[in-house]
Length: 217
Length: 220
Image 1: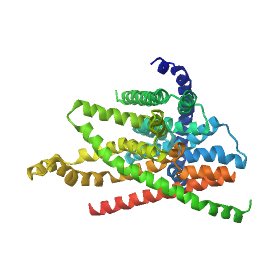
Image 2: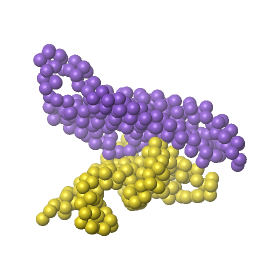
Image 3: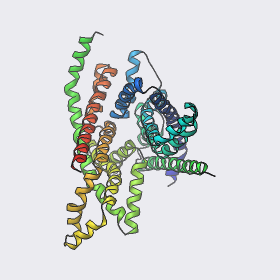
Protein backbone atom coordinates (compact mmCIF):
# COMPACT_ATOMS: atom_id res chain seq x y z
CA UNK A 1 0.00 0.00 0.00
CA UNK A 2 2.84 2.35 0.89
CA UNK A 3 4.53 1.77 -2.44
CA UNK A 4 1.20 2.55 -4.08
CA UNK A 5 0.89 5.85 -2.22
CA UNK A 6 4.50 6.64 -3.06
CA UNK A 7 3.42 6.83 -6.71
CA UNK A 8 1.21 9.85 -6.04
CA UNK A 9 3.80 12.65 -6.47
CA UNK A 10 4.90 11.48 -9.93
CA UNK A 11 1.33 10.96 -11.03
CA UNK A 12 0.40 14.39 -9.70
CA UNK A 13 3.07 15.91 -11.96
CA UNK A 14 1.83 13.82 -14.88
CA UNK A 15 -1.79 14.81 -14.34
CA UNK A 16 -0.73 18.43 -14.67
CA UNK A 17 0.90 17.68 -18.05
CA UNK A 18 -2.19 15.79 -19.26
CA UNK A 19 -4.40 18.68 -18.14
CA UNK A 20 -2.19 21.34 -19.70
CA UNK A 21 -2.02 19.58 -23.05
CA UNK A 22 -5.68 18.63 -23.25
CA UNK A 23 -7.18 21.81 -21.83
CA UNK A 24 -5.06 23.96 -24.13
CA UNK A 25 -5.98 21.78 -27.11
CA UNK A 26 -9.67 21.76 -26.14
CA UNK A 27 -9.77 25.55 -25.73
CA UNK A 28 -8.03 26.14 -29.07
CA UNK A 29 -10.13 23.42 -30.70
CA UNK A 30 -13.40 24.80 -29.31
CA UNK A 31 -12.55 28.37 -30.37
CA UNK A 32 -11.44 27.09 -33.77
CA UNK A 33 -14.59 25.03 -34.14
CA UNK A 34 -16.70 28.01 -33.12
CA UNK A 35 -15.00 30.26 -35.68
CA UNK A 36 -15.27 27.59 -38.34
CA UNK A 37 -19.00 27.31 -37.73
CA UNK A 38 -19.40 31.10 -37.72
CA UNK A 39 -17.52 31.33 -41.04
CA UNK A 40 -19.59 28.52 -42.49
CA UNK A 41 -22.76 30.38 -41.50
CA UNK A 42 -21.48 33.64 -42.97
CA UNK A 43 -20.18 32.25 -46.27
CA UNK A 44 -22.32 29.15 -46.85
CA UNK A 45 -21.61 29.15 -50.59
CA UNK A 46 -17.82 29.24 -50.43
CA UNK A 47 -17.07 27.31 -47.30
CA UNK A 48 -19.52 24.45 -47.08
CA UNK A 49 -17.48 22.16 -49.39
CA UNK A 50 -14.03 22.75 -47.79
CA UNK A 51 -15.66 22.49 -44.35
CA UNK A 52 -17.20 19.13 -45.20
CA UNK A 53 -13.90 17.82 -46.55
CA UNK A 54 -12.05 18.91 -43.40
CA UNK A 55 -14.60 17.27 -41.10
CA UNK A 56 -14.55 14.12 -43.24
CA UNK A 57 -10.75 13.86 -43.15
CA UNK A 58 -10.44 14.48 -39.40
CA UNK A 59 -13.34 12.29 -38.32
CA UNK A 60 -12.51 9.50 -40.75
CA UNK A 61 -8.99 8.84 -39.47
CA UNK A 62 -7.64 7.84 -36.03
CA UNK A 63 -6.16 10.62 -33.91
CA UNK A 64 -2.93 8.62 -33.68
CA UNK A 65 -2.44 8.80 -37.43
CA UNK A 66 -2.99 12.56 -37.38
CA UNK A 67 -0.47 12.89 -34.55
CA UNK A 68 2.25 10.93 -36.35
CA UNK A 69 1.67 12.89 -39.57
CA UNK A 70 2.14 16.15 -37.65
CA UNK A 71 5.07 14.96 -35.51
CA UNK A 72 7.00 12.66 -37.88
CA UNK A 73 5.62 13.73 -41.27
CA UNK A 74 5.64 17.53 -41.26
CA UNK A 75 9.41 17.84 -40.56
CA UNK A 76 9.85 16.42 -44.09
CA UNK A 77 8.45 19.68 -45.46
CA UNK A 78 10.31 21.79 -42.92
CA UNK A 79 7.76 22.15 -40.10
CA UNK A 80 9.41 20.85 -36.94
CA UNK A 81 7.74 20.82 -33.54
CA UNK A 82 8.51 19.44 -30.09
CA UNK A 83 6.43 16.49 -28.95
CA UNK A 84 4.28 18.70 -26.70
CA UNK A 85 3.72 21.28 -29.45
CA UNK A 86 2.85 18.59 -31.99
CA UNK A 87 0.36 17.08 -29.54
CA UNK A 88 -1.37 20.36 -28.82
CA UNK A 89 -1.48 21.38 -32.50
CA UNK A 90 -2.77 18.01 -33.74
CA UNK A 91 -5.22 17.63 -30.88
CA UNK A 92 -6.57 21.12 -31.56
CA UNK A 93 -6.97 20.43 -35.31
CA UNK A 94 -8.60 17.12 -34.48
CA UNK A 95 -11.02 18.45 -31.88
CA UNK A 96 -11.91 21.59 -33.87
CA UNK A 97 -13.72 19.40 -36.41
CA UNK A 98 -15.82 17.79 -33.67
CA UNK A 99 -16.42 21.10 -31.89
CA UNK A 100 -17.48 22.73 -35.18
CA UNK A 101 -20.03 19.96 -35.69
CA UNK A 102 -21.31 20.48 -32.14
CA UNK A 103 -21.82 24.19 -32.76
CA UNK A 104 -23.45 23.37 -36.08
CA UNK A 105 -25.93 21.16 -34.21
CA UNK A 106 -26.42 23.99 -31.69
CA UNK A 107 -27.33 26.43 -34.43
CA UNK A 108 -29.52 23.88 -36.18
CA UNK A 109 -31.50 23.51 -32.93
CA UNK A 110 -32.71 27.14 -33.07
CA UNK A 111 -36.20 27.46 -34.59
CA UNK A 112 -36.17 29.40 -37.89
CA UNK A 113 -38.93 31.66 -36.60
CA UNK A 114 -36.56 33.40 -34.15
CA UNK A 115 -34.42 34.66 -37.01
CA UNK A 116 -37.45 35.77 -39.01
CA UNK A 117 -39.04 37.53 -36.02
CA UNK A 118 -35.77 39.33 -35.25
CA UNK A 119 -35.49 40.47 -38.85
CA UNK A 120 -39.10 41.71 -38.77
CA UNK A 121 -38.19 43.83 -35.74
CA UNK A 122 -35.22 45.25 -37.63
CA UNK A 123 -32.60 43.84 -35.25
CA UNK A 124 -29.12 43.84 -36.78
CA UNK A 125 -27.46 40.58 -37.85
CA UNK A 126 -24.77 40.96 -35.17
CA UNK A 127 -27.31 41.51 -32.39
CA UNK A 128 -29.27 38.49 -33.55
CA UNK A 129 -26.09 36.42 -33.42
CA UNK A 130 -25.02 37.67 -30.00
CA UNK A 131 -28.30 37.95 -28.12
CA UNK A 132 -30.61 35.44 -29.76
CA UNK A 133 -28.63 32.67 -31.42
CA UNK A 134 -25.52 32.41 -29.23
CA UNK A 135 -27.24 31.87 -25.84
CA UNK A 136 -29.56 29.21 -27.25
CA UNK A 137 -26.88 27.41 -29.24
CA UNK A 138 -24.45 27.34 -26.31
CA UNK A 139 -27.09 26.14 -23.85
CA UNK A 140 -27.91 23.35 -26.30
CA UNK A 141 -24.26 22.48 -26.82
CA UNK A 142 -22.99 22.32 -23.21
CA UNK A 143 -23.51 18.56 -22.66
CA UNK A 144 -21.93 17.84 -26.05
CA UNK A 145 -19.01 20.14 -25.25
CA UNK A 146 -18.49 18.24 -21.99
CA UNK A 147 -18.44 14.97 -23.88
CA UNK A 148 -15.95 16.29 -26.42
CA UNK A 149 -13.63 17.73 -23.74
CA UNK A 150 -13.56 14.31 -22.08
CA UNK A 151 -12.74 12.76 -25.46
CA UNK A 152 -9.83 15.17 -25.85
CA UNK A 153 -8.46 14.20 -22.42
CA UNK A 154 -8.74 10.54 -23.35
CA UNK A 155 -7.12 11.01 -26.76
CA UNK A 156 -4.21 12.85 -25.13
CA UNK A 157 -3.07 9.46 -23.80
CA UNK A 158 -1.89 8.71 -27.33
CA UNK A 159 0.75 11.44 -26.92
CA UNK A 160 2.66 8.99 -24.70
CA UNK A 161 3.65 7.25 -27.96
CA UNK A 162 5.69 10.30 -28.96
CA UNK A 163 7.10 10.56 -25.38
CA UNK A 164 5.09 13.45 -23.95
CA UNK A 165 5.52 12.97 -20.17
CA UNK A 166 1.78 12.79 -19.44
CA UNK A 167 -0.10 10.18 -17.39
CA UNK A 168 0.22 7.16 -19.67
CA UNK A 169 3.90 7.79 -20.40
CA UNK A 170 4.61 8.18 -16.66
CA UNK A 171 2.85 4.91 -15.83
CA UNK A 172 4.80 3.07 -18.53
CA UNK A 173 8.05 4.63 -17.29
CA UNK A 174 7.44 3.49 -13.72
CA UNK A 175 6.48 0.01 -14.95
CA UNK A 176 9.64 -0.40 -16.98
CA UNK A 177 11.95 0.90 -14.23
CA UNK A 178 10.42 -0.95 -11.26
CA UNK A 179 8.91 -4.06 -12.90
CA UNK A 180 5.76 -3.58 -10.85
CA UNK A 181 2.68 -3.63 -13.02
CA UNK A 182 -0.47 -3.52 -10.98
CA UNK A 183 0.26 -0.43 -8.88
CA UNK A 184 1.18 2.02 -11.65
CA UNK A 185 -1.54 0.85 -14.02
CA UNK A 186 -4.21 0.89 -11.30
CA UNK A 187 -3.09 4.43 -10.48
CA UNK A 188 -3.26 5.33 -14.17
CA UNK A 189 -6.85 4.16 -14.50
CA UNK A 190 -7.84 5.93 -11.26
CA UNK A 191 -6.24 9.21 -12.38
CA UNK A 192 -8.00 9.25 -15.77
CA UNK A 193 -11.29 8.23 -14.24
CA UNK A 194 -11.12 11.00 -11.61
CA UNK A 195 -10.10 13.52 -14.23
CA UNK A 196 -12.98 12.71 -16.59
CA UNK A 197 -15.49 12.58 -13.71
CA UNK A 198 -14.35 16.03 -12.52
CA UNK A 199 -14.78 17.46 -16.01
CA UNK A 200 -18.24 15.90 -16.28
CA UNK A 201 -19.27 17.42 -12.92
CA UNK A 202 -17.81 20.83 -13.82
CA UNK A 203 -19.82 20.92 -17.05
CA UNK A 204 -22.95 19.83 -15.19
CA UNK A 205 -22.53 22.83 -12.89
CA UNK A 206 -21.95 25.09 -15.88
CA UNK A 207 -25.08 23.73 -17.50
CA UNK A 208 -27.15 24.32 -14.34
CA UNK A 209 -25.72 27.82 -14.04
CA UNK A 210 -26.62 28.64 -17.65
CA UNK A 211 -30.14 27.23 -17.21
CA UNK A 212 -30.57 29.36 -14.08
CA UNK A 213 -29.35 32.56 -15.67
CA UNK A 214 -31.57 32.05 -18.72
CA UNK A 215 -34.75 31.65 -16.70
CA UNK A 216 -37.07 34.57 -17.53
CA UNK A 217 -37.49 36.65 -14.37
CA UNK B 1 11.05 14.29 -55.69
CA UNK B 2 9.21 13.81 -58.97
CA UNK B 3 5.66 12.47 -59.14
CA UNK B 4 6.29 9.11 -60.92
CA UNK B 5 8.81 8.15 -58.20
CA UNK B 6 6.34 9.01 -55.48
CA UNK B 7 3.62 6.94 -57.16
CA UNK B 8 5.96 3.99 -57.60
CA UNK B 9 6.99 4.13 -53.96
CA UNK B 10 3.41 4.40 -52.76
CA UNK B 11 2.51 1.38 -54.89
CA UNK B 12 5.34 -0.53 -53.25
CA UNK B 13 3.91 0.20 -49.79
CA UNK B 14 0.44 -1.03 -50.73
CA UNK B 15 0.76 -4.82 -50.17
CA UNK B 16 2.05 -4.43 -46.62
CA UNK B 17 -0.46 -1.73 -45.75
CA UNK B 18 -3.20 -3.98 -47.10
CA UNK B 19 -2.03 -6.77 -44.76
CA UNK B 20 -2.17 -4.31 -41.88
CA UNK B 21 -5.62 -3.13 -42.93
CA UNK B 22 -6.88 -6.71 -42.90
CA UNK B 23 -5.60 -7.15 -39.33
CA UNK B 24 -7.28 -3.89 -38.34
CA UNK B 25 -10.52 -5.05 -39.95
CA UNK B 26 -10.78 -8.47 -38.38
CA UNK B 27 -9.66 -7.21 -34.99
CA UNK B 28 -12.37 -4.52 -35.11
CA UNK B 29 -14.94 -7.06 -36.33
CA UNK B 30 -14.18 -9.42 -33.44
CA UNK B 31 -14.32 -6.55 -30.95
CA UNK B 32 -17.65 -5.24 -32.28
CA UNK B 33 -19.23 -8.73 -32.35
CA UNK B 34 -18.03 -9.75 -28.86
CA UNK B 35 -18.84 -6.27 -27.58
CA UNK B 36 -22.38 -6.62 -28.88
CA UNK B 37 -23.14 -9.73 -26.82
CA UNK B 38 -21.26 -8.43 -23.81
CA UNK B 39 -23.11 -5.14 -24.23
CA UNK B 40 -26.49 -6.91 -24.08
CA UNK B 41 -25.32 -8.74 -20.97
CA UNK B 42 -24.19 -5.50 -19.29
CA UNK B 43 -27.46 -3.81 -20.17
CA UNK B 44 -29.34 -6.77 -18.63
CA UNK B 45 -27.26 -6.39 -15.50
CA UNK B 46 -27.92 -2.65 -15.27
CA UNK B 47 -31.66 -3.19 -15.77
CA UNK B 48 -31.90 -6.05 -13.30
CA UNK B 49 -33.61 -5.68 -9.94
CA UNK B 50 -30.52 -6.72 -8.03
CA UNK B 51 -28.76 -3.68 -6.59
CA UNK B 52 -25.36 -5.40 -6.74
CA UNK B 53 -25.67 -6.28 -10.42
CA UNK B 54 -26.87 -2.87 -11.51
CA UNK B 55 -24.16 -1.10 -9.53
CA UNK B 56 -21.51 -3.42 -10.99
CA UNK B 57 -22.78 -2.61 -14.50
CA UNK B 58 -22.71 1.13 -13.76
CA UNK B 59 -19.15 0.97 -12.44
CA UNK B 60 -18.06 -1.05 -15.48
CA UNK B 61 -19.53 1.43 -17.94
CA UNK B 62 -18.18 4.42 -16.04
CA UNK B 63 -14.62 3.06 -15.86
CA UNK B 64 -14.47 1.99 -19.51
CA UNK B 65 -15.98 5.23 -20.77
CA UNK B 66 -14.00 7.41 -18.39
CA UNK B 67 -10.51 6.16 -19.28
CA UNK B 68 -8.52 6.05 -22.55
CA UNK B 69 -8.53 2.90 -24.69
CA UNK B 70 -4.74 3.02 -24.68
CA UNK B 71 -4.60 2.81 -20.87
CA UNK B 72 -7.07 -0.09 -20.96
CA UNK B 73 -4.99 -1.97 -23.54
CA UNK B 74 -1.81 -1.49 -21.51
CA UNK B 75 -3.58 -2.97 -18.49
CA UNK B 76 -4.83 -5.99 -20.47
CA UNK B 77 -1.42 -6.59 -22.01
CA UNK B 78 1.05 -5.91 -19.21
CA UNK B 79 -0.83 -6.81 -16.03
CA UNK B 80 -1.29 -10.52 -16.95
CA UNK B 81 2.35 -10.76 -18.04
CA UNK B 82 3.36 -9.10 -14.76
CA UNK B 83 1.47 -11.84 -12.94
CA UNK B 84 3.44 -14.44 -14.90
CA UNK B 85 0.66 -15.22 -17.33
CA UNK B 86 1.80 -13.56 -20.54
CA UNK B 87 -0.76 -13.32 -23.34
CA UNK B 88 -0.06 -12.38 -26.97
CA UNK B 89 -0.69 -8.77 -27.98
CA UNK B 90 -3.47 -9.74 -30.38
CA UNK B 91 -5.40 -11.50 -27.62
CA UNK B 92 -4.98 -8.57 -25.24
CA UNK B 93 -6.07 -6.23 -28.04
CA UNK B 94 -9.17 -8.29 -28.84
CA UNK B 95 -10.16 -8.51 -25.17
CA UNK B 96 -9.46 -4.83 -24.48
CA UNK B 97 -11.30 -3.50 -27.51
CA UNK B 98 -14.25 -5.86 -26.92
CA UNK B 99 -14.62 -4.82 -23.31
CA UNK B 100 -14.31 -1.16 -24.27
CA UNK B 101 -16.96 -1.27 -26.98
CA UNK B 102 -19.18 -3.42 -24.72
CA UNK B 103 -19.50 -0.44 -22.38
CA UNK B 104 -20.52 1.88 -25.22
CA UNK B 105 -22.77 -0.68 -26.91
CA UNK B 106 -24.59 -1.42 -23.65
CA UNK B 107 -25.57 2.25 -23.55
CA UNK B 108 -26.60 2.32 -27.22
CA UNK B 109 -28.59 -0.91 -26.94
CA UNK B 110 -30.15 0.34 -23.70
CA UNK B 111 -31.87 3.18 -25.57
CA UNK B 112 -33.27 0.54 -27.96
CA UNK B 113 -34.51 -1.73 -25.18
CA UNK B 114 -36.33 1.08 -23.40
CA UNK B 115 -38.02 2.10 -26.67
CA UNK B 116 -39.83 -1.25 -27.03
CA UNK B 117 -43.42 -1.00 -25.83
CA UNK B 118 -44.03 -3.01 -22.65
CA UNK B 119 -47.11 -4.58 -24.23
CA UNK B 120 -45.00 -6.62 -26.63
CA UNK B 121 -43.16 -8.32 -23.79
CA UNK B 122 -46.44 -8.97 -21.98
CA UNK B 123 -47.89 -10.38 -25.21
CA UNK B 124 -44.86 -12.67 -25.57
CA UNK B 125 -45.40 -13.90 -22.01
CA UNK B 126 -49.04 -14.56 -22.75
CA UNK B 127 -47.97 -16.72 -25.68
CA UNK B 128 -45.78 -18.68 -23.28
CA UNK B 129 -42.48 -17.54 -24.75
CA UNK B 130 -39.65 -18.01 -22.27
CA UNK B 131 -37.67 -14.99 -21.11
CA UNK B 132 -34.83 -16.03 -23.43
CA UNK B 133 -37.10 -16.50 -26.44
CA UNK B 134 -38.64 -13.10 -25.82
CA UNK B 135 -35.18 -11.57 -25.68
CA UNK B 136 -33.85 -13.15 -28.89
CA UNK B 137 -36.96 -13.24 -31.03
CA UNK B 138 -38.93 -10.19 -29.90
CA UNK B 139 -36.61 -7.65 -28.33
CA UNK B 140 -33.17 -7.94 -29.94
CA UNK B 141 -34.29 -7.78 -33.61
CA UNK B 142 -36.10 -4.53 -32.87
CA UNK B 143 -33.31 -3.14 -30.69
CA UNK B 144 -30.82 -3.72 -33.50
CA UNK B 145 -33.09 -2.11 -36.07
CA UNK B 146 -33.70 0.90 -33.83
CA UNK B 147 -30.07 1.47 -32.88
CA UNK B 148 -28.36 0.50 -36.13
CA UNK B 149 -27.18 4.03 -37.01
CA UNK B 150 -25.57 4.42 -33.57
CA UNK B 151 -24.07 0.92 -33.81
CA UNK B 152 -22.49 1.75 -37.17
CA UNK B 153 -20.93 4.89 -35.74
CA UNK B 154 -19.62 2.80 -32.84
CA UNK B 155 -18.04 0.43 -35.40
CA UNK B 156 -16.30 3.41 -36.98
CA UNK B 157 -15.08 4.51 -33.55
CA UNK B 158 -13.67 1.04 -32.89
CA UNK B 159 -11.80 0.95 -36.22
CA UNK B 160 -10.22 4.29 -35.26
CA UNK B 161 -9.59 3.28 -31.63
CA UNK B 162 -7.90 0.08 -32.84
CA UNK B 163 -4.99 2.17 -34.15
CA UNK B 164 -3.49 2.22 -30.64
CA UNK B 165 -3.09 -1.59 -30.58
CA UNK B 166 0.12 -0.89 -32.51
CA UNK B 167 1.59 -0.09 -29.08
CA UNK B 168 1.13 -3.64 -27.78
CA UNK B 169 2.91 -5.29 -30.70
CA UNK B 170 -0.04 -6.01 -32.98
CA UNK B 171 0.87 -5.49 -36.65
CA UNK B 172 -2.23 -3.57 -37.58
CA UNK B 173 -2.44 -0.81 -40.19
CA UNK B 174 -0.80 1.77 -37.92
CA UNK B 175 2.02 -0.58 -36.93
CA UNK B 176 2.76 -1.40 -40.58
CA UNK B 177 2.90 2.34 -41.21
CA UNK B 178 5.46 2.73 -38.42
CA UNK B 179 7.55 -0.16 -39.78
CA UNK B 180 7.47 1.16 -43.35
CA UNK B 181 8.34 4.64 -42.15
CA UNK B 182 11.39 3.41 -40.23
CA UNK B 183 12.59 1.43 -43.29
CA UNK B 184 11.97 4.09 -45.89
CA UNK B 185 12.69 7.25 -43.87
CA UNK B 186 9.70 8.80 -45.60
CA UNK B 187 7.22 9.26 -42.75
CA UNK B 188 5.04 11.87 -44.45
CA UNK B 189 3.99 9.75 -47.43
CA UNK B 190 3.76 6.48 -45.49
CA UNK B 191 1.63 7.88 -42.68
CA UNK B 192 -0.56 9.80 -45.11
CA UNK B 193 -1.14 6.63 -47.10
CA UNK B 194 -1.99 4.72 -43.91
CA UNK B 195 -4.45 7.48 -42.98
CA UNK B 196 -6.03 7.08 -46.46
CA UNK B 197 -6.61 3.40 -45.72
CA UNK B 198 -8.41 4.32 -42.51
CA UNK B 199 -10.40 6.92 -44.40
CA UNK B 200 -11.52 4.34 -46.96
CA UNK B 201 -12.60 1.89 -44.23
CA UNK B 202 -14.52 4.45 -42.18
CA UNK B 203 -16.12 6.04 -45.26
CA UNK B 204 -17.34 2.68 -46.51
CA UNK B 205 -18.80 1.90 -43.10
CA UNK B 206 -20.57 5.24 -42.92
CA UNK B 207 -21.91 4.86 -46.49
CA UNK B 208 -23.19 1.38 -45.61
CA UNK B 209 -24.78 2.82 -42.47
CA UNK B 210 -26.51 5.53 -44.44
CA UNK B 211 -27.72 3.00 -47.02
CA UNK B 212 -29.22 0.79 -44.32
CA UNK B 213 -30.87 3.80 -42.70
CA UNK B 214 -32.44 4.84 -46.00
CA UNK B 215 -33.73 1.31 -46.62
CA UNK B 216 -35.22 1.19 -43.14
CA UNK B 217 -36.86 4.57 -43.59
CA UNK B 218 -38.49 3.33 -46.79
CA UNK B 219 -39.77 0.18 -45.13
CA UNK B 220 -41.21 2.09 -42.18
